[in-house]
Length: 198
Length: 138
Image 1 (cartoon, rainbow over the protein chains, first blue to last red):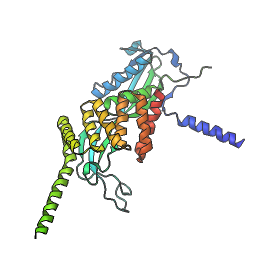
Image 2 (tube, each protein chain N blue to C red):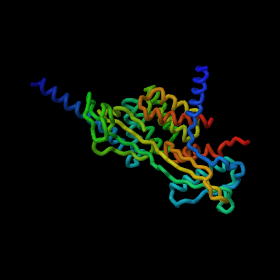
Image 3 (tube, chains in turn yellow, red):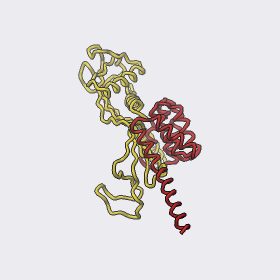
Image 4 (cartoon, rainbow over the protein chains, first blue to last red):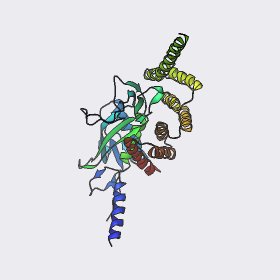
């Protein structure tokens, strides 16, 4: 009996553990009636336009009709950018390997902790990786940060003005374009939610 | 006396050689930073003729990516892996490159290699996150 319970718990753990979506939605809302969608304009910056274009692309590929006015739509899609980091690369120097060091201002320091000495050489462009003691330079390493984009999306019913669905996510890409595509694709993957009909 | 002179001369030459080696990557990174990608590529190509290393191939791939020459970047990264089969940075860049090109199967393969070879916990987490999403796309 106990074994069965453990197996059930293990299955339940695996099932919920694999669910990565943070989507939350209004349980009694009928998502199947949604046909026409309006995506808010937001501010006219290159960042918001890139996000908006990607949302439109994803929703169209899901078969929704995209409208140019909220008056013609069943729902409106609003979004906010929580993170927008173009990729950067740095040449930094590794800490000298000490067996033990007193804790620094940011907590204990361990051997091989990567710290930036002097001014790092920043390389604009793509991609977080450590190239190791690279290019014959002792204690030096190239660390690169990828492009990261975080977005939060809220969907409202036009008639009732109720928020019916919300989700947020952060994703990384080689550049901003692929990070934007990735984050919007994975946010909207959970839209519309699969509802169990009575 | 001759011996001392010879030792001093030997040390001087060594210092010159090593300082040149050390300046190479700094110089290349500076060129990349200034957007002089072509010059950076030419410099790394010349370095590669002298000595092929995985790091140089990774560096030239970075330059190719800046130039959006993705197939050349892919070729260079594969060469880096052939020289150093556990070159995590090369797998990382290939995974990102394949994601950009929507080649999900290939991207999954590279993220799996990262999981296998990296000891960096953050990178492990990142790889797991991407694997979870990409496998959901198939």
